[in-house]
View 1 (spheres, rainbow, N blue to C red):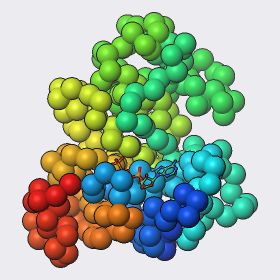
View 2 (view 1 turned 90 degrees about the vertical axis):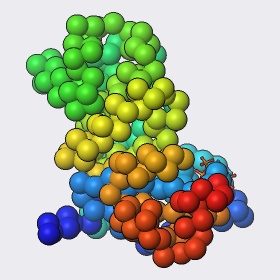
View 3 (view 1 turned 135 degrees about the horizontal axis):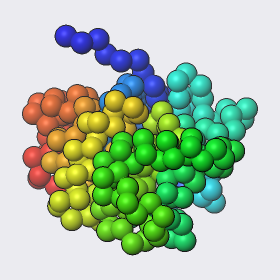
View 4 (view 1 turned 180 degrees about the horizontal axis):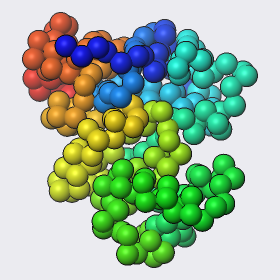
Length: 256
Ligand SMILES: Nc1ncnc2c1ncn2[C@@H]1O[C@H](COP(=O)(O)OP(=O)(O)OP(=O)(O)O)[C@@H](O)[C@H]1O
């Protein structure tokens, strides 16, 4: 048996509030380096709220508050000494709807984050763009149109471009919030296939409504229900022999 990889992200007794509404309740979870981790559960149960806490996106939401600890490589990302901007470079995010920068070319989209870190060397930018586009399984489709507008790509290509943009700054974690829900089945399959390659270079946390997708792509699954994390475990175990009857009812399609 292979040794488990080290824990890269540890949530400890995390509560998340919107005003008085406690949307996430006392969640503790560990994610290991180089794994795909799915968050599943019915609508409104706190999956996205939890995901957004992992790169401090709630800092921008008026009235939102995170309590407890989220450790990235052992360091609490909510420590006042942590700079949220540089922390977010270590924790990339891909959203439900592809959101390339609409006025930029394919190439400029990929290297936008890198340029913000001060990299100007053309050869280096090109090298990173190619590596990131290959990493997102998009290179062959766009290598001859790098200087054309990103908005000219199909929806599925745009989503892979957003993945490439996130990969360009070498994130330790990649958060994906229902990344295929706006895509057709062929584009969805491409992104699912990509995940096993992506986990060689990063650690993925994915929110998905699609239980088959969670079963196909993830190593661990966490089941959320009205703010509680009911069960977390190896994906096979969650889908074949869940310990909690509420998990069993959800994964067997009896509600949700
Ligand atoms: N910006 C916000 N302000 C106030 N309440 C919010 C905000 N975002 C989410 N909520 C509330 O927090 C709770 C959890 O919502 P969240 O979006 O995290 O659930 P979810 O499991 O991701 O749902 P879905 O699967 O539908 O995306 C819900 O009650 C929701 O109404």
